[in-house]
Image 1 (cartoon, rainbow, N blue to C red):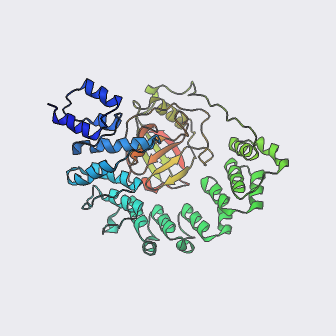
Image 2: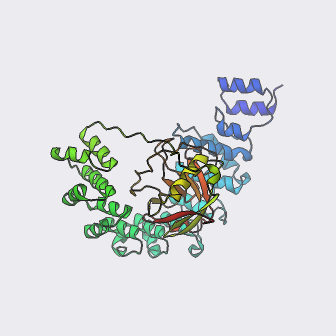
Image 3: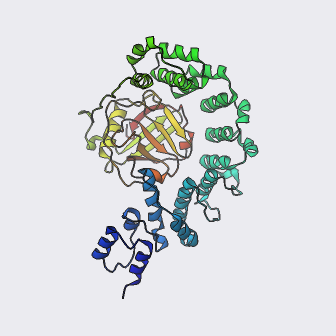
Length: 440
C-alpha cells in the first residue's frame, strides 16, 4: 500500500524522469514535502500545505533572477487562490509582488498596515482599482504607488505633493501637467517637465550643471550643432559620451576626419562607442582584482554612515555574508572615492543607485570584486552591488526602495540600511558627501 504523501507527490510531478526516480529511491516513503525541495528541487511541485507557498513563489523569483524559462504556474495560482485565507500576510504580500510582475489576478484582501504598501503597489502595476484610503496618512512610497494607480485626470491633486517621486508620477501619468511643473523644486522633476514641454532653453541651461542631471538634460536637447560642440570641446567625459550617444540616436554619422580623434579620447566609453559606431575593433581592458592595500576584514567597521545632501543613512555591513565586497567598499570609502559622487539612477519602488565616478552608470574603481551570492532577501533598505554580469562589480551599489525578491541570489547583498524612513528623499542628482564609520 502506498502512503498518501507518495500519492500526493506522484500527482504533481511527472511519473517519469530521473529526478523523481532518484528521489523515491532515496526516500521511498516521504512523509511531507520540504521547503528546500519546493524552492530548489529539480521539478516544480504544487505545495501540499500553505506553509510551503512562500518557497514555491521564491522558486519563480529565482528563475527571473537568472533569466531562466518561466514554469507554468497556473496550478500554483489556483492553489494560492483556493487557500488564500490560510496564507499569512507575508506570503500574500509575496504573491502580490509576483502577480504584479506577471499580470496575475489576486484575491481581495482587507486593507491593513501590514499589506497596504503591497496592495497599492499591485494596483499601480496592474491598473487595478485603488482602495479607498486616507492619503494624508500614507508614506511617500505609498503615495507614489497610489498616484501611479490613478486615472490621468485625478493625479493633478498631487501636483504639489512634498515628495519628488509623487510629483514625478503626476508628470508620468499626465504629461500635460508639464507646463505647470517647470518651476518644480526638484531639479530632476523640472528636467522631466522641460522634456515633456519641449523647453530646449531650460534643458540647455540645466545641461551646464555637473553630474547626471547635466548630461541627461543635454541628451534631451537634440540639437546637432550643440551636441557636436559638446562632443569635441567639453571637459566632462560623461557629457561627451552622452552627446555622442544622442547624436548617433539622431542618425548622425561620425565624420571620417574625426574617427581617430574620438578613438583617442581620454574617456573609455567615448572610444568604445566610436569603435562600435564605425565598425572598428575594440577590446575593453581587463580590470584587475582587489588591490593589495584593501584592508583585512577585521579592520572593516561593522557600521557606516552614508552622508548625503538628502540626509544621513546608517548601514550595517554584512561582513560574514560578503567579506570581499565589504573590504572593497570600506577601502573606497576610507580613501574618499565616494565623496562628491551622485546617485545617477533612482527608480521609486525599486532602487537608488550610485558609485559611478562619471555619474552615468558606466564607471568604476578600476578593478572588479568577486560575486558573493548569498541568501539575504532583497527587501527595502538592503544594499547590493551593481554589475554587468557575475564577477564584474566594482564601486556601484544600490539601495532597495521596496521588496524586489526577483533580485535574490543574483546580486551580492553586503549591507542593510537601518533607518529607511527617509530613503525616498534620494533622487537623481542626490550627492554623497562622505561615507564614514559610525565611530568616526
